[in-house]
Image (cartoon, rainbow, N blue to C red; front, side, top):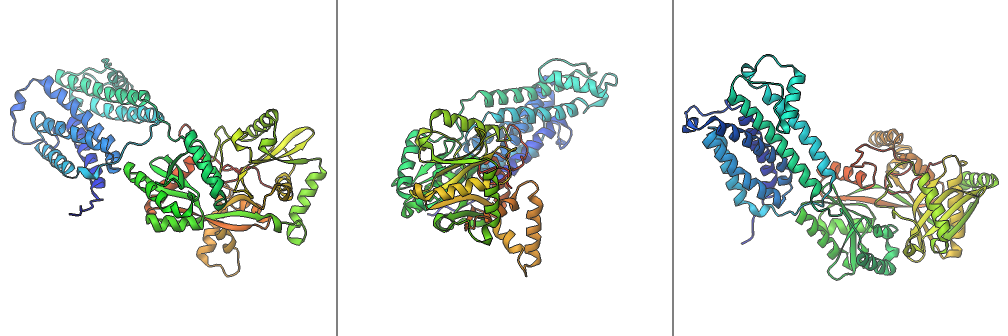
Length: 573
């Protein structure tokens, strides 16, 4: 018999866990609310027992709230933990705290979870010790708020009139098991406050220590064996996609089709399984690799997404995985055979390149394998000094390294003046007869037009190196900018273009488009592939985090000096 899908169950379970957790907290800090009118035999129990029960209920409630999000994401460990906590909640509610409605709710929720246990199958996410810090800060703030409420919940039991600072001091000391300056006229109330604060502090300390000390697993790592297999696929099929070589980033994971003839490189960021570019390898094996990718996403309840895939890849993704596609921009590809500096259309580039060259700049175009170790180190040091941020950006269109012996076919272009390196371009191989821009950096004090000169020299040297195609920068939403300025553009298109121009103050969207257009490229559209429109904000945030425009250690949005995707960044002229 075919099993009926109940995709709504995890979401409902998550909200139910949140509700039961809130009820447990309420009955602990405000025990009179919702209490049954029937006086139970539990009143005969010692006061210390009821006090401990309330403190335990408070801890259970906090844990249920913490597990609610993971339960919504179908995490099997969260399901097991909630199943273990619900009977505790029910027993405390019924026996000690006299809340039969809460007890029945917990038991019904438990039965529902057991009946739908097949809906909770997802494995845990890759671990990160940053979670320990956020756990400490988040629960610490919650402890202060709840503790302050608990201390002042019975004002008639307070001895004297303690001020705000005294109460906060009492909370902070109570979290570590020390009596504070606030005293209570009723010993039972004092015990309740003491054990509640101690329970809150214990939960925070235990969960933080667990997150900090558990064995670390790398978020993503390309093993040497996987890298070798990818290189074999790129040797045979690397000409299909200009972004293929970027799959060799060593902070990505990779999955292969069952036949091993196709692969997809990805990284998991904030619950999003993020791939970039088209699948690598034999196109006939792409569907099998996509099925493996989607199965892995389902196992972990990750949101599958692809950024920067080409039109062919987007068609296969949408057809095989049932996903949707959104055009996010265009890649600028220059055909070397068609490039010339002659004509009115190239006057600006020609003049800027000639002016810069007359200013004393010289350029060198070489394969990385031709460089000495000293030259590599000089280029690496110069590039790092111009980066402008502590974090190396890039994911979908950046290799993330320079000068590795296995990358000897990469092309590096350097500009020199007075014996110093003033700018660097780094290209990765794109099949046997193409290169794709990986890195564009220059000294901020260098003359305007230096980027144009570097690209011109690259295109002029390309034929002698057997290069027929050069992929330049990615222009975000290029089509909207181009169409929005045409005669007859509608109000919606003009408004969308106006918004992009406004955003260009932070992300140089228009500048990249204008810069790329100088070289008369062929525009190749690139797409974002996603499951549902409601997932787009989450995918967008994950992409920004993967590209290092948002970093967990310093959670703020960084100004994009030249690109939204990749590491091809330099001040543009």
